[in-house]
Length: 596
Image (cartoon, rainbow, N blue to C red; front, side, top):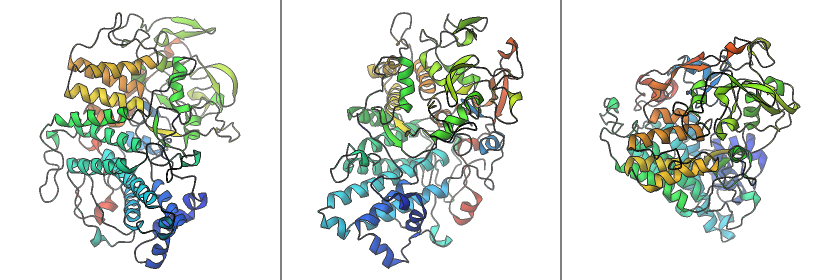
């Protein structure tokens, strides 16, 4: 089993320096303090500690109710708590002066630290004394990868960004030294893609330190991680938001340079397909499958089985125990508030592999007795990923404080209903089950014991879907489209296209629809949906009123679609976040995103 991950805190380093005040001290070192910095980069340990701090900016997507908006501000999730920033964003309480989820300055800190490391690690006396030029080269490639990744994170949130190249911008630089314009989006893509290629050419395929592989090395950057980031970068760049988008013809720098290319280029899809195939062709990864062949466990295990063969890029230290407890019902000691929207429930296929609108198995009337309780027929005969991902009324749950499986209800006056707690109740009548570790006991009724597992940021299942999507746009009808789409389905025993009673999609448009729905289901709650609906330019169509079951009821009228919450989408502002007024005031050449 290959354990290919990115870990903020490289375990070979001194933990106190990585996670405490020591790392801030390293970050705050600037060229004015020449003696101290020169000493740092002549010694092996302090240089490694500095590099560990560069890893410290890798994103943690665990907190999807307050720190990360990519789920609860899309059409797949709703976070019930009005005190958190996801609620403020959903009602439109965001502006340059109130820049929610402001990551602009944070990622530039990571970029600055990476650049300083790259420019100063050469000639490290202690490492060279160990015949360590190869190790220096690897460390530089790690920093180059991280810098490119932080640019990518900026680009997906803000669009075109400021490229600094090898410029060293000290943390205390005056405003006049920080006047740089934004680069065109295509220029940003070319730069970041090139940097990832350079990193991948040097990085090992298996995490190692100077050729030595052991558990302590897992978490270091690898070639596969660099190529996976490139694959997603190029997929986004080929998509309608960035590829010939005339809606943004007036999005220009002060000198008149257009920031979003106005000419559609089909070759961008070929580049995206080639980049995804390059990850596949490494032969390092495989779809995770339960050893016993259980399709539900196969899907659950993607996130819960640590270091499995599908995971490409993980964050080891994370807040997943918080995710667990926020998704768990109150009966289990959880906080009962990460609700799945009805729109997401309706996206799951039926057991025959068809969407609900095309399947004879689907019904919204009557009940079927399951484990002694009546289950609404909407939830019967669904595909395995539905049962692995959604806690619905009268489904069984075991975990947290619940020592045995129990039926979970969301009726108004039930144990998990809205009348039982002032804040902790799902607005939609559903909870997320996917990637919720039942061993976590960290809620209001728990004892704080945590079940540690890595947070997967990139996995092979996504790469398969990236490849299929890009190939369908560039070379519709290519046999690989169906091959990799069906591999995703086969893992969870969903009938494959081309099997009995499930025809192969007959047109490019039909195949696109199927790929988009497969992506929505397969990658649900992994923070993809927000970016997908924007890059496809369908956000205005799918955002707005989010639905759920009628949680105000205690009888069968519960099973009625009602509006659960509003998720505002405002054109054109909602495609990218505003750059904060603070950063705009400091950077006079940076133009604000449209609509802000």
